[in-house]
Every structure is written in C-alpha cells, then in structure tokens.
Length: 244
Image 1 (cartoon, helix red, strand yellow):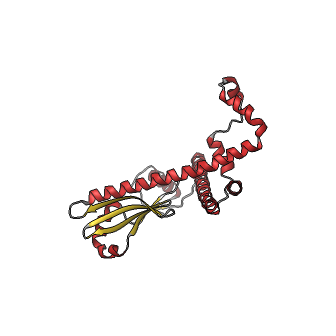
Image 2: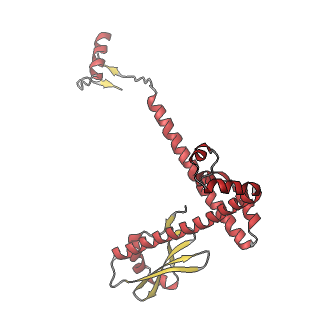
Image 3: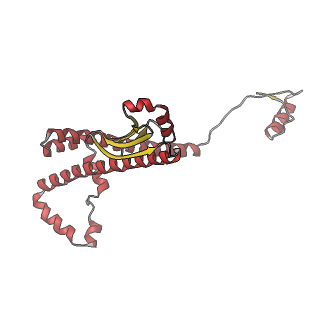
C-alpha cells in the first residue's frame, strides 16, 4: 500500500495559512500526498481557509472543506487535516484493491480458458462440501498463495495486461500500477525477510561465548601482591588503583 507524504504537519497548517495567505491567493499548495491523491491548501476569501482532496490522475476534486480563521482554532484545523489524510489513504486503498482484483480476475479467467475441460469438474468438486476431499487436497489455491505466486511475477503480469486490455491508455495505467504495486509488495517481503534474518542472527550471537582479554597495571612490591590487588579490584574494591 502507498504511504502518506506530508509537507506541512497538521498543527502547522493554520499558522502557514495565516503567514503565507498572500502567496496562497495566487495558487494552492500541496500539504500532503497519498497515492494518486493530493491535499491542497488554498484561500477562498479574505479569512477563509480551504482544504480539498484532489485526484491527480483523474484531474478531479474529491472532497472540499473550509474554515473561517477568525472563528476556528488550530485544533479544529489540525483535526480536519488529519481526517483528510485518512480519507486519502482510504480512497487510495480502494483504488489499489480494485485494480489488483481486476488483474487477479484476468489471471483466473486466463487459467479457466486454458483448463476448459477441467473447469466443470473443479466447479462440481468445490460447490459440494466434502471434508475428506478438502483434507486430502494439497493444491487448493488460496489468495495468499496466489498473491505470492503468479501476480508477483512482474513479467507474467505485464504480459497478461497486454493480452486482455485493448485500450492503450488503460493498458499504460494498469502497467504503471502493476509495476509500482509489485515493487512495493516485494520490497515489503524483502524487508520482512531481512528483519527475520537479523533477529535470527542476533539470537545466535547471544548464545555464543566470547573470550575477551584486557591489559591493566597495578602498583605492588612483588608479583603475588599484584595478583591479590588485581583480584580485589575485580571483586569491586574501589580502593585499588589500576592503570588501564
């Protein structure tokens, strides 16, 4: 999933509006982005602060809200910005899931087309509940296995989009989406594996015993006195003076 990028923090929006009102009258500024969506700050009238969510791909305003800065508070504006960012995140997730599901549908339809003779048998098997068969069945494809199988193979997915989409604009849109989505998903997998590997190594290191050697000097009249002084020092006697 995409992440929210903030250029002005929630608590600074009202302050920024008041400070840069003249500049904002010329053009709005982006205060946050999430996926295809931008949150814009602008001036609607002398003291009217405007917040609107804009879809950059569709060139369409999604939602709009205003505040009278003479009557509102920093807390209310901050809360409105936070809610707008949450709204952008929800809208972006819906867009991602719709496009991802459409590609999965193409995969399933493509499989069905190439396994036409088996389709009726598989349909009949899965309509009825047969607990013994389900327990024996090792090749049932769940969504997680599918996601980490065919879909994450970028070459296969791009070829599938080429195969089923005829409109060049939509084809470019879905290719761009697939590349970004698969790179995002695989980077998360790589990061999770790296974390797991680091934790495993850390645990193994904790089990290993290491030998360390330190060199110190103590003042004494002979070797035996020096040995006793060192033992007292190691036991925590702070009266013993050592040179490290």
